[in-house]
Image (cartoon, rainbow, N blue to C red; front, top):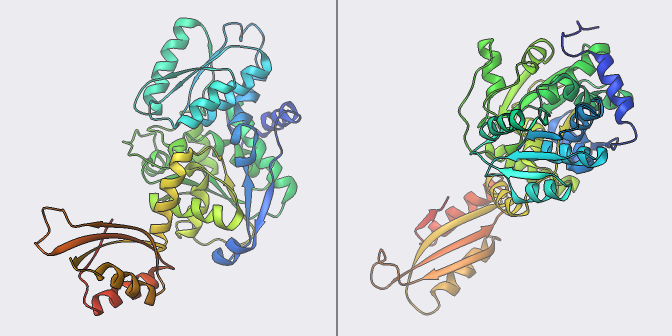
Length: 408
C-alpha cells in the first residue's frame, strides 16, 4: 500500500470510476503476438484511442465537471488544450448543458479544432504552443467567471485518468509493466496512484518525446523546470512545464521516465497501422516507440502500452507514414545524373528492377542550371525492404556506373 498523496488517493479514483461508469467506454486491452515477439515479452495495448472523443482526456474532464455544483458551472467552463482535452471538455459540457470555451494553439491540427467545435464548444486559436494558449485561457476565465478545467494539474482530473489503471488491474492483475505517455503528468499520476495502491511491484514507465522532455529533466534536477520545446509529432504531450501537483506524485510513484526520438514515434505509428490496424496519434504511440527503440529496457513479464489517443490529422498521417517508412528503411530517395540520350531513363528503370526495388515517383529534369550540358537529372523515390536492401540498391547502381546521391 502506497502513501496517500495530499491531492490524490485511490478513493478518489474509485469514486471517479463510479461517476464515469455509464458515460465512457471501457476500452479494450488487446494482445499483440507480433510486438510480443519483437519485444521478447508479452505485450498488450490499452486502446484509449478507441475511447469516446478519441482519447483518454474525456475521463478527467468529465469527472471534474460532474463533481461540480450547478452554481460553479453557471458561467460555463473554459480550458486550454492542444486538442484531446478540448474535445473531452466540449463533450462533457454538452452532456451537462453548459457553455464551453476552449483556447487552442494556432498550430493545432484542423481535425482537432473541427471536432471540438462539433461538440458545441467555442474555440479560440491563440499562441504558438499550449503554454501560450493556457495563459490566455486563464486570463479569459478570470474576466468571464467561467470555471477553469485544468488539462492535467487537478486531483479530480487525475482521478478520472486513474480509472484506466483500475481497468487494467481488473483485467490483468498480474501485469508487470505499464508504459504511459507523459505531458503535464496528470495521466501517469492518476494511473500510478491506482496501480501502486494495491500492486506496488508493478513497474510504471513514463514516456516523453525528446522534443518536450519537461518531466525527465525536472526529475533529474529534483524540481520543476521549464524546458524549451521543438516541433513534435507528439503534440498532445508537448508542454514546457509539468504540473505543480502532478510532479510530486510522479516523483514518488513512477519508476522511470524515458525519451523517444521523432523517427521512433513515426515508426511506431506506421507499425501500429500495419500490424494492429490501429490509428494512433504521436502522443499515443510514444509507448510502443519506447519498446521498439530500446528506450524502455529490462522488461520482464506482461507489459501494457497505453495508446492514449487516436486524433491524428489526415494531412499529418501522410507525412508520418512517409517518415516512418524512411526511418524503417522502406523508402529511399535518390538523385542521379544521366546522359541526355534516348533510352537512358529506360535503362535506369531496368537496372533498378534487377535489384527488386519498386519505383514510386520519378521526376526527370533537363533544364536545371546546375547541370552540365548533355546531362539530365532524375529524382527517384523507391519502395525498399529495409536497410540491407537499400545498401544492395545503392551498391548495385554505383557498380553499373551511376553516380548516386541519397536525398533526405
